[in-house]
Amino acid sequence: MKGKFITFEGAEGSGKSTQIELLGKYLKERGIKVLLLREPGGVKISEQIRELLLDVKNIAMTKECETLLYLAARSQVVEELILPAMKKGLVILCDRFQDSTIVYQGHGSGVDIDFIEKIGRFATQGLVPNLTFLFDIDAKKGLDRISRAKDRIERRSLSYHHKVRKGYLEEAQKHPERIKVIKVNGGKEQIHQEIRRYIDEVLDLSSSANG
Ligand code: TMP
Image 1 (cartoon, rainbow, N blue to C red):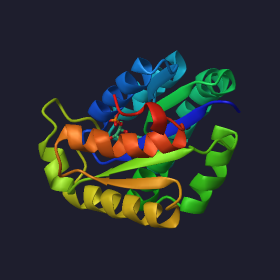
Image 2: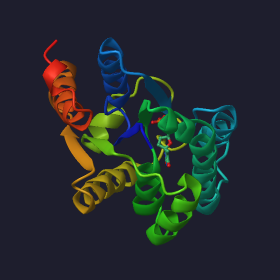
Image 3: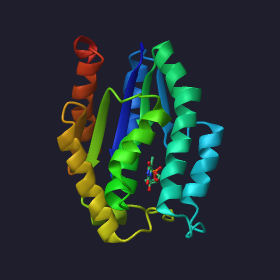
Image 4: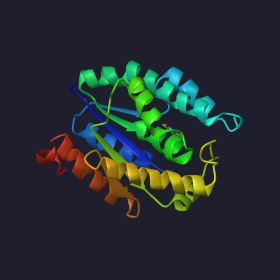
């Protein structure tokens, strides 16, 4: 695989989408071919599954159904978009991936994490990100920052979102070589610089990174 697969994780309202855009711009300015996408989504079938997952009317959805739908959406985007982009040598910036399912459905809703990891390997064909940024923010602070209508997952209780935050930090401790924790308390430019330091190292851009 010639490309690099970089994922962005974290609670709601942590500002990760803004950072993905800033990083995408930074890389494009350096002539690097970038693919930006979000999960669940990225391709038509996965976007359709996303609608089912986030629709506030689907209150009857079980945690098992929810888990399998997230993995189904992922399997489609991996095969249709991510793996071909990796083969072409692109840098892929992906808003959420497998860690989200481990944390939201596993740590948050109590689905067996070993099961998610096993079926997750089937869904992703074993693809693991080269680097993951975890945007860490207090659960309430993050939720308060959402100004649009909240989706089905965002509407869950504060205690659920506390479990999500804790789960993320536990996963980061398990995989310190891959998951880098970014504390969301600085301004967006300061956070961007912090991310660039990791990216410059992973993509070997240090000599051209001063612009
Ligand atoms: P987004 O708001 O970051 O686009 O993500 C959509 C929602 O789906 C968000 O509330 C987190 C949730 N989610 C899961 O619960 N499990 C998953 O595997 C993924 C990818 C997202």
